Image 1 (tube, rainbow, N blue to C red):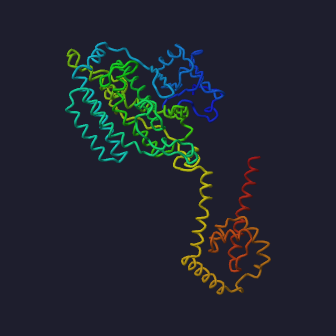
Image 2: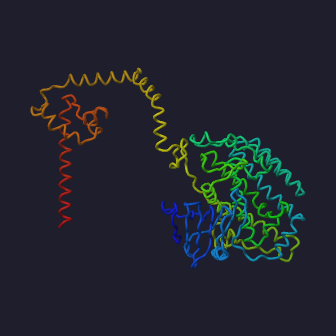
Length: 529
């Protein structure tokens, strides 16, 4: 690995600061990103928890650099280093707002940009908007039907989707999308949000459900007031960054949208590309909040009620950026080709634009398989339902909480055990065992016992050998329970009819130990020679 770091937690744990998907998230105060001696040097953190990273130009594995916050600096030389290495750079505010996005940009054709600018006032723009919303409603219908198990609401969304074919204006398309969104988000309102029991007393009441998608602070989804909406806003910000990078890489203007209106300081085209992928982000979050717990320490509540993500969760969510970039890539290429094939441009309408993001044309030419599916989502850590600690995948409690839970259940288990032990089945089983042992004892003839096998011989010779065996081995030989075999191993003297079998077992065990000891001695002597 071409990265070195000082005083960082990842150095202690032996983990690379870059995720498997090539994402590095930096956060804190006094962030520094610069180039020294050809290496990219990064410093971030808060107070004494600072880390220093250093990357060479070769072998670093960095694909995306995500910066959370606005305190610090990044030099022009560092931006040039990232651009030369085809590393995308995204700067996000702590509330998830996209501040700056840079990445690999290709030279654009002015004819493509002109077609993009004219699409908003032509039938081509209506066709593009209709297709984008159709894909979005199809994805929302799948989430509502298969994830939220709401077949009736899914059918209503299907009905709205059918109305798109008759929508001949952008306003009509936006109205259909808004009505379908109202049905879709109504299914999310009462979804329960689970926290560890340790955090229950510190959780506000409005954090216990997903709640309305519209924030009471702004009247819009922005500035969320509970954890799931804050997580969804941050994931949408990552998707917006990837959409902007995809548009710029294809030579499109991220600010000239078709479906979204022109607003200052907003990448309208990036928001257009986001629409069909939003339901995929929703499904990812839905799987998270329905299968796993959320920690109280992942979120911070501001004095006005705004819920913010802490750095630990933001870093984990940033690892999903390649998923959204891979999902939006074919959509961006489709949109670019659609604009390029505009009827206004008959001279080059049959020309096919290069697929820089998916490389689908190159794969087809080489006989490869076109991969358009998103990558597997990053691994989510399992959380103990009691204390909130990280546990192994598949477990619901850590070791300490399992012991405490077992201790709390002990009185009930003991009561059930006592009732079971004194039940009719248990008494019948004990009676049968006592009859069998009594019959065996009465049938045993003491004159068949060897004269040397006396009580003193058993105590002095056989019992020490049995102490080296397991209770299970003893029980298997004489046909008793494992508990009774353990008692014999510890010194309990069984009925004399068992002495002969135990003596043979002890002698065989002693001979085996002797053979092993001789083998070890011979091996050590051979090594010395």
